[in-house]
Length: 188
Image 1 (cartoon, rainbow, N blue to C red):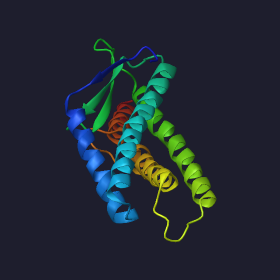
Image 2 (image 1 turned 30 degrees about the vertical axis):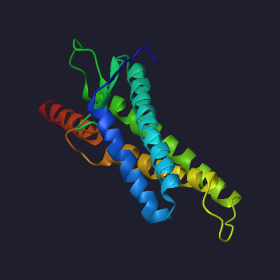
Image 3 (image 1 turned 180 degrees about the vertical axis):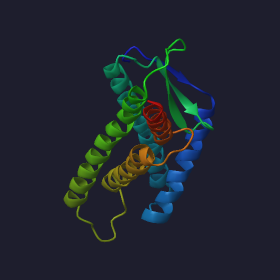
C-alpha cells in the first residue's frame, strides 16, 4: 500500500484485546447493551480503532510524499502495542524543520476528515432510527455506538493530540521542529 512496508508487533494483539475489553465495558456502562451486543460493539470499535490508526498513518504518508521525503513503512503495535508509528528511511538526510512539521500534520488532517465523516454518520443514523419502547438494542444501536466511539477516538486520540507535545506523538514532533526553526532563526 503506497509502497509502504507494513509491520505488526506482537504487542498489538494483546493491546487489541485490551481495547476490545475497554469498548465492551464502556458499552455496558454507557449504553447498557446486553453482553453479546456489547461484545460485538467492542469488537467492531476495536477494528475501527486500528482502521483509524491506518488512516492516520496514510495521512502522514501522503504528506511525506508531498514533501519529497516519503515514509518507508508503518509499524503497528508500538508503545505497549497501542499505537502505530511512521517509519522513514534510515539513510534520510537531516531535513528542515518545516518538512517535519508538514509530515507530522498529515496524520491529524486525515483524522480530522474521519472525525467529520463519523459525526455525519452518527447524526444521520441517530435521526433515522427512532427508539422503540421495550425493543432490545440491535444493529442500528451498535452502528450508532461504534460511530460515536470512532468520532471520539479520531477527535481526541488522532486529531487534537497535535496540540499536546509529548515525546511520542505528532504534537511533540511539531514542537521539536518549531523550536529548531526558532533557534535557527535566532542564530541568523
